[in-house]
Image 1 (cartoon, one colour):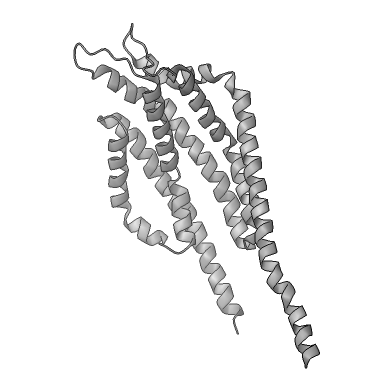
Image 2: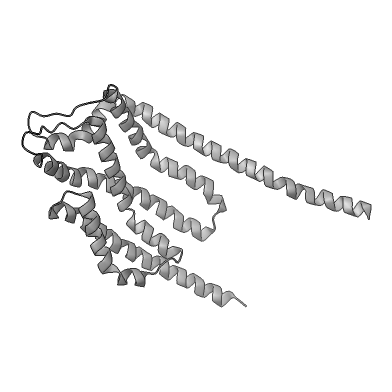
Length: 266
């Protein structure tokens, strides 16, 4: 009996040792992925740092074109002429490295996903990156010119428009993020339908509220004129409809999978 107990303990001991080993291996892999991500951002940053001032000039172009003739941007901080382009270059480096960052995240979590989850995750990752870029581009090329033209012409008489470069950078970075996230609406809809939080029918029934919400968001993020509000609200509404279109496909596949599981069940 002593021999049997001892052999059974020897048999179970490796199972107890696998858990910490597995945890350590996951942590080591996570560290490797994070290091690769940091190196990728650093490489892009070093490649762009020489162009940091032209990059800032490019980002500031919508405001500079809208400012009254004879005015210019200012730097109120001692280190602002260096720190503002430096900060912008760092954010642009992360922005450019997003596909590689998501690839590293995908490589880390993919082994733990089912096959059908992998099939859904890859298109969602690719489309989320493209939609975020599209939102940022829409903000720069469409919203910024209208917004800054309005701001530049609305200054009270006797007030010179001289925007601080650090304040401007914080403002546009927040807007880039806001528009990038807003353009993720189709992804959010597809995910909610995929996990069963809601259905296409419920979202379609709430279409009137969604349209109102789009115009409210447009009112909050753009100058108080109907043109710029519509330029944001209409694309968001179209993205909502696109989300419903792909949501129908996901819901249909989900229903078919559930029916197949019920049919295979004994």
